[in-house]
Length: 310
Ligand code: CP
Image (cartoon, rainbow, N blue to C red; front, side, top):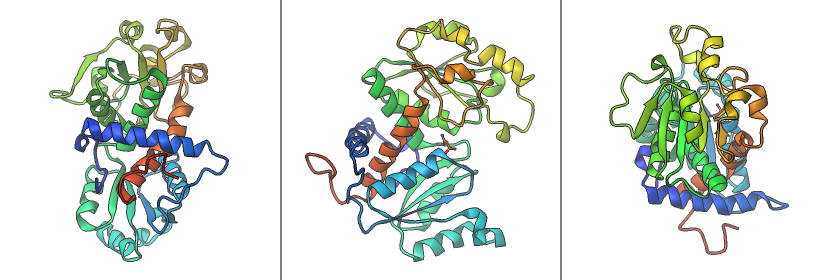
């Protein structure tokens, strides 16, 4: 692998290999000194044109735990504000000697475009409504850790699918790993067509809840909505929000997931987010090990040595 741009570029064997590698790096994270010299001498930087807490910080943590050098770049305090173009910015950063560029951008396809301009590896950290592949990998890893695997696991992805790059990556990753995916949303929050997507579609959350192993809630992405796609957030929440009453209809071992940031009281009730079956914090924790695996896969020299990455 030279770049990680989309789940649709990955095979099942790629995902299995990355998740196995994640296991090794999760073990590193539990050590007293959670650091290995695997990427000594390599440099990683990030180009985030959109806000982020989890993805940005977990890539930084991952790079540091692998002993890579990190070059901090903040779009908001850079020459981008003086009008520097994307291409000039990227070529300037590359000229300083970077091995990987982690990119988040509001427009779909920007990471792929950057990959055509540079010789460094490019990782898509979320582009427009297109994809967020490391989120999908950490979601697969979290489900595998809790349920033993994804084969035959029934997953409902609930909410604002239309604007969600997480949903687009998760649908393909979950299906690739053998899960059965159902999208649950009002018609206005589904893409105009899901023809060719490996999913079922439903509009009644209460009907779906008893028959799923995972309820994956999506954030209502109000910043991406150009019109009122639901009558009101209160009405959306009444029909599609995961409340304590609704959780009572889920299976005993069924999980609640959310990519964050959560709108508590909209797609998820505050008390539901705190239940033991809610694995949102595990998702964040696993994000560091998954991103270590991705950086190692792209920049590490050769296969991981038997006995672990240390
Ligand atoms: N899940 C996710 O991408 O979160 P951030 O926007 O905080 O990175």
